[in-house]
Length: 568
Image (cartoon, rainbow, N blue to C red; front, top):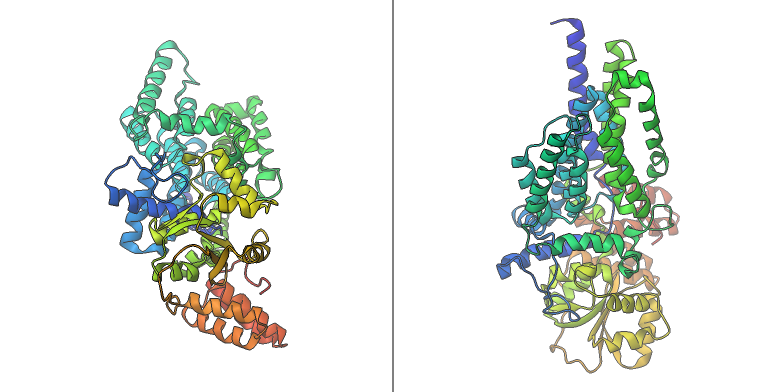
């Protein structure tokens, strides 16, 4: 073997080791994944009912109505995974999907660019741009299937026997299949050898895949749902943060997008004769990037598919640039730089499921102890609950606590229902009358969110509501005319119960008791964010800065969350 071959082999080894680690390092986005809970609960519901044609059993506003659950197969995967490996192990599912997604993209780009290094650089950049949107939700299947589509079609002839089954799976995993059909049309179009025969063959493949996508419980109705979102600008559900344009303040933001949104201008380089002599024009990348950039500028939720499309556009140019760099030693150095960067990014993050789960889905933001109280006392009824907690209630109570509205949005609920909720959220002057008009028997609300304390006091002052339980994050009230089971008992003694007592001690200004309970929480959950914040804050309050910094370092050693060290 020649020295040149040795260098190539060494560079390839560094990339093959470094690339999966790099992609994994972008799978640690912290997000209050409220949808995850009802997806897992839906998988359980599917097995309980034995049918994929679902009706609502979790709300009192739409109870018994048809529910367009176009992600039913993803829900079964979720619940199956949880049943086999446990709830916290969902972070492993996420990481595996992330690695598989960008590895497929890398392999496709290596084929079009002729450079493994260019492929890793472009796929890694796509992962970095998409990272803020990578949470535990079925939308990851659209990213995975889009990259699989690129792997199957870039530089290859379309094989309908592979593509049609892909769309049967995709349509039942996530509504992004509709974008997949648009991407398919671009990828199979005979850009480089256009004639009637090739166009007819591509058209038949497209028709076969579209027909395959009809194989879902809602048939053509599943096609209409994405169109409804795309063209109904009056829908109040589009006011949800994920649908906002990227330049609108608030919501999830991808800082890199604001730089990379200008990179498609590099497509002008393909107009240069010298470039076209070296690489063929990636018409697929040009069209996909133009389409997805327009989509991303309309709604930030499309930024990840723009990032992937941009990688297809840029990979040949990056590959051409790297070919101008003489010397295989330089390529080895660059490959090991990628490996070092990947290890540096991954080093602070855990591979242990429990602390990762706690931060990746913001477990600390859910009323765990309060719902433990609900479950222990077998409470049932209609609850006006905070929107983001609906799915968590479904998972924990299996329909015993029926909500007013939840994250299933317009797959089930109508606009007036949502707008009524928003009026309550924003504390409109008649918000309490609105809650009572729904027929809700309970109200579950965050302590601090949307003037939670003011809402609590106003409900007490009305004389029509009384308190049931309050934990570290939320309060639960019940109407005075609702009959409850006798002899309600406290929730079981868990770290979440200790956290409730720690927060209560903070409010009572008994900081030593707050620290004692926080330390008790951390004996079982040393990564618990709220307990860490309280312990650090109390130490600092008493001037024990070194002890506080030691606790903070230990907490961050479990997960380097940017949310740690918040005011307690």
